[in-house]
Image (cartoon, rainbow, N blue to C red; front, side, top):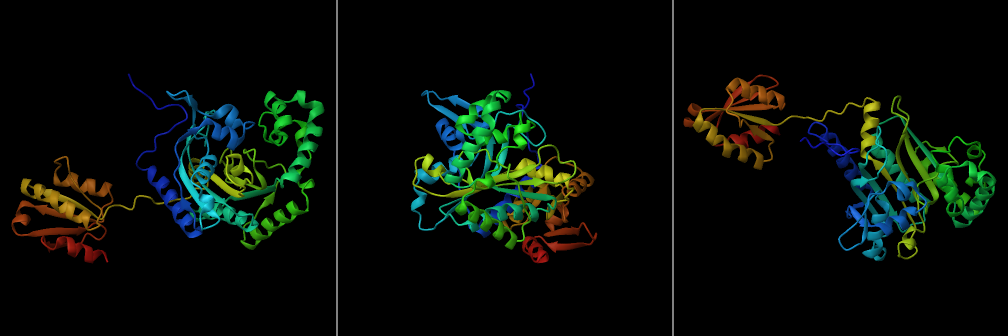
Length: 423
């Protein structure tokens, strides 16, 4: 019986995984420049964390979570996103007391959502995200957005669109909420059951409904921008000013809402404008979530962050035809002739690797011609040829695979000589 991979998951094989590693490396390097530090949280958490932190009116909580009971009868959930876990760790480990404020964190790892698999959407997917906790400065909103944009640009993406909105402060959201209720209530029976449940709990979530997005009331719904008070307007204007100062183009979309119930002020999405990318164009999304730390049991602490999918990142690179040469080849391949030379090469290979040289040898007892073919497949820059006769004479031949030049070197000093040649 053949056991196949679960639906909505994928194997990332050699030849593909190198691109993943490069993106992860770029993300880590960029976070170091921006002074964000890595945090690693459990893959599963208590279910209550996500129902409170993500919001019980969201599709994630209502439909998409992998939830199970452990042997102690506790309800646990595979993490569907990274913000709630990061904030939980921030509260539980009392990072709000850190001398360095704001606390700037990043995470990278698998997330899980039970949704219909399609292009760019998996049930297990990998997110990279950042969270900045402790600052109300709109400049850090711009910083968070700029980090995401710079990561995409450093990998060669050009066809990007940044869309931003303001959800306002608490006062503004209450005013907007009342207007939304009045707008939708007379005809709420025409909407799906999810929207009917959201009307009183969180009417803003109706605007994010995929099933009823073509309903005529959607296009005429009250805009949050019309309900921003003076403080919220000033905040949003500052964010736009800083983005302009950072030379980051953007569009304002009053209909943009985010999946968390506790988002406020800045909300944003980065989309791919590449032709043929697919129906799901969003690459990254985030926003400010003042109030989330308190909801999870911490002190009043403002926060902002974003998350991006590595899978969609790679899809965007392919859609734009960005050519990234991944396999740079190895430094040296050892070709051996004879049993004594083959035995000696085991230790010689170790010496090369300990000296920082990427090296390989044959393990299949292949003939010399087949060993050279293996070296070509590995894109070896040099091939070192060692036979029993050379071993007796303390010699080894080194061939430059690009030029074809070949030199004879002393075996005792081969590793140090090879290192000098690389400099």
